[in-house]
Image (cartoon, rainbow, N blue to C red; front, side):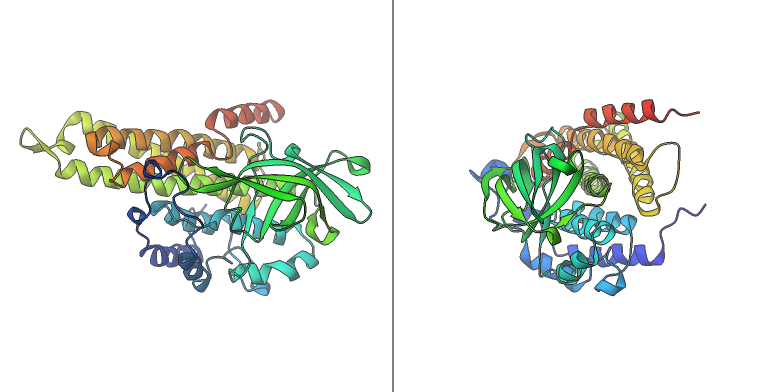
Length: 380
């Protein structure tokens, strides 16, 4: 089996490196230095450059103006975004578009995909439930009202909600269609939808969305079975890609610092205690990478196996959450006092790492999920 990336996937990664080369994470204040969000909205200039490079339409078919690539290509691009802490809804927007394309009908595709692929519409996903620890789909209920649907409930920690044109909301159905999860494409200015500002660990602006009898038409609801599970898996895997890129950048920063910082007349990187810690973190990153590509490949290919794709996604998130936490903790330790200096960029990377560690659930939640999957699909 050939595990190398295709020319198209590598070209997407190269294009992303070119776009993100101009991003300077130091230009955004550290969360510790602000009383509110680090910025009102996302980086619109960077968003435009991503659109010009056709990186917002990466997963869309050529018929919709896209590149026709897969989850592996998206994760290669997100890895580059994580290295520079890119302040754009690239993951949420791309995953939502992919879900509309794969599970929506022709009416969804015709109205949304081409415009969103050009960056003219911004999509995000409400994926964190009521508290950030509950499953997202039961947090909002959907009931029929003639041909339309009425949505009620609360979704917390919705990223980029103040900037998005549409929010994809998973909703648990009631009434005659009880027991299913649908995806509602809710306009940000819909009647009955309100938002309360929240600030993430990374200093970014989130929103608690409250839905009170929000009416959406049938053309704005995706009812396909498995649509939410597929979208959630792609979001989790993309989060792992962001964590990998961030961790690789942090380990590089640590290597540069310990190679220059001298103690007793020698660079501290030459000390065995420092080298062993750095080597352990390198192993963490390689494990994060291997499990990430396994999960992304399973989503892209739908390959059969003893476990459903959710098993590979769970393993990837466990490694990403635990691994990125260990990488930034070791970096803080090896940087000494500089690691805690809020004027030094490592502080901002640490804040983002903590956010990514807990986003869509901590490692413990996925260990429980993996245990349930193993109990349902025993190996051997």
